Image (tube, rainbow, N blue to C red):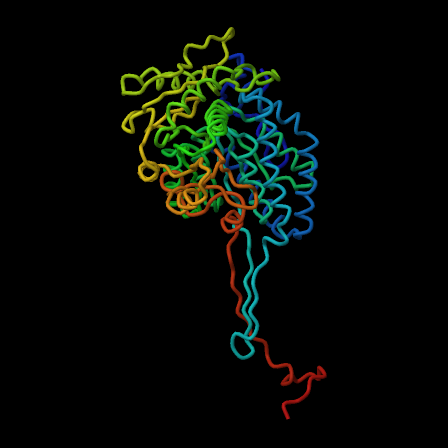
Length: 494
């Protein structure tokens, strides 16, 4: 069985005694295995990052930027190869995998502008003969812990900015689809990044705890579920580290009566069922306001029947399988219990049959969902769309703002005043206006509010520069050159 290696100090290592299977979700078969790093192996990666830090920190900004320009070229050149790896281990269709890589590239392009991003400030003559300036310096070794659902994009959210700012990195990707991270790390090396600056260790809680507890690791970035995000934040911050821990979501899409109904229905289907709903920005609750509900649900149901579900390598497929058999069964359990909790199952994804042992499930639509039901309160992370009906705009806003998550939200309307008011009133970190998945472009930062974020910094973009650097302020006074004992050609005070 092929074993996916760690990459430490530029070298592949696969000595872990514990292993975990890596499945092809489309077939249900084990395609390879991955070693689960021990604490000692994780410490070795941390030590490699620490050893590489002084030289990388001293590397000029132009040379750092050159790595990212080369990396951008390599990612575009090898995009098809990387997308195939993602589809094989995650299951998402190739077009989704290619889209993920394209969004990750935005962060590489942002990092390439590090000359501008890392500028400090200067104030001359704040007092007589006294100047003050500030600089941004790297924090040191950074630990990055990433989820299975975007094995290329989310690592690039973190790693690109961290390395551009002069830090070195230990990445612990999901053990469910780990190959993409090794591929990325090798591309960095090919682009000219020195060995040890970017290290990859695979593993489970033992490896994560080693990162969180290591006194050498100065900052931790995490994306995952809310309970784990909170645990990561508590443990790492207790150990004196900077932490940004992005948690779960229950993203709402509010549709007002004046919305473009076909456009809203198309958006709901793509946002709820794309990538099998395994997105932290997937729309999982549709809030139908006023009398639009019946027509909207009917339009969504009609579109669902045309959705092609199959192997992600098949060009005809629009949705692939879920990541594991356990996740598929978990998603099915929510649909099974929906009617008992007062919902109306319009389309039951469990009814769709598939002719292999892959981790497939059909798409589900549940109307009249009660806000006390598990379908509404839990992050399902699968192709299930819940519809909640309210009478007014104010009820919709109150519903969204009362939810414990505050990751992303969207409103569909033709009314600019309503959209502006929604933007002003809604309590979420990312808002879309007639855009169902409002993931910011790379020049902005990604993150939610409430239980969707632990820490005070969002990932990538400008906030990442703040997170991965420490500001240092220097106040200086130099002797008046006219009083020097050495004749420097300055006029005397007389």
